[in-house]
Image 1 (cartoon, rainbow, N blue to C red):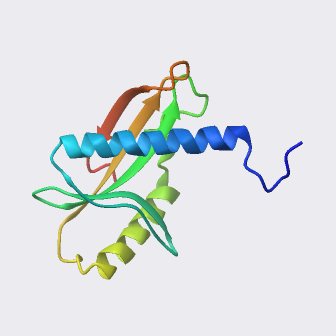
Image 2 (image 1 turned 30 degrees about the horizontal axis):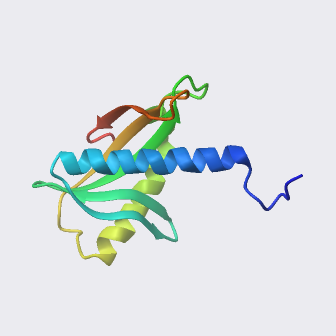
Length: 131
């Protein structure tokens, strides 16, 4: 019997899938010649998965990972209005802390789907200016 303070196998799998999705998203962004400024930047208001820059803007990227055949909708659909507000608030803190408020900012979502059987990345969908 596991103690309630120990993560379950399901939690470990979810965390592992999330890490795998973020790594795949980072590789994807680098292949598009973006510069990654920070990953998993945290403050009181939340966490920003990837902060990148291209020739035109600072890009705040929310990464969502799902396994294929899931019952809870697509990864992109999981970025609801509450999550968008939280990401915007956290981005504001980041931009002020790094004196980047004067630069244009874009909010993207990268949705990663992992094949349930092979546990390999099945697809990556990049939604620019998602919110």
